[in-house]
Image 1 (cartoon, rainbow, N blue to C red):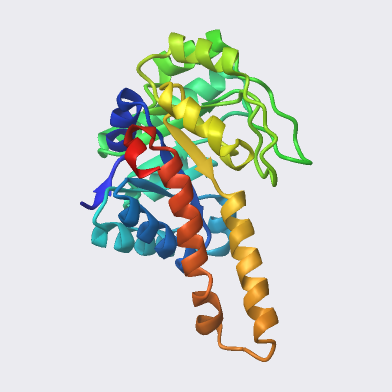
Image 2 (cartoon, rainbow, N blue to C red):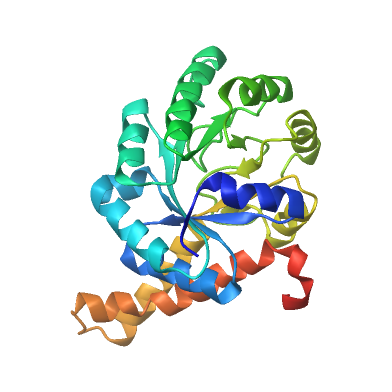
Length: 282
């Protein structure tokens, strides 16, 4: 298997009662670890380049790294631009070979969000690429507050943008360092009922417990969970332990390589948990 679009992996997940993980990448070590984990679990994975990653590494470099890994993988790998800030940035990602882009117009008035997202979706579809949009605003832990998704607005957004996946705000928050998030399942269920043909996405998935992720996936309510913070915590703990164990170490490759095994193990747990269709493996 090789490069896949978001639609190609999310449509079967929505129908099959499982979810695909959108894993937030920051560098070569975690990118490689996430593909290793996906191959071990024999499941697709979405490798996401978010704003922080793009601020650190130029988009053309990220595209080459991610596509190289995807093309050599034994499972479907989606190369996804997360939280694209503009039409131009999404267009650049598409030109560079990303197989999926997210345009984030969640802070805009509804009409403007619809129009801008629809334009990106049309561009993506013309290139054979998938597009994710966001309706409502998913806030940040100790930062900007969320604005919950209005189900009626979500239905209009889904119909008028033709997005392949829709991120919603139902109690989820970015950058959560614990799993205390309480998902508003009533609101989520209403959105899903009004938008039956659009896979739903939960950003800030690290704040949602493994049990709730599994239940929401099995119920067909959520087809994609974005996971970043808990994996960065694993990276940080592993790196600190490595430096503490060898305080005189200075070789960058030798040090960073020690993070790959724990990152792959953590990613395996995430991926396996989202596949309740494979109970025999849990």
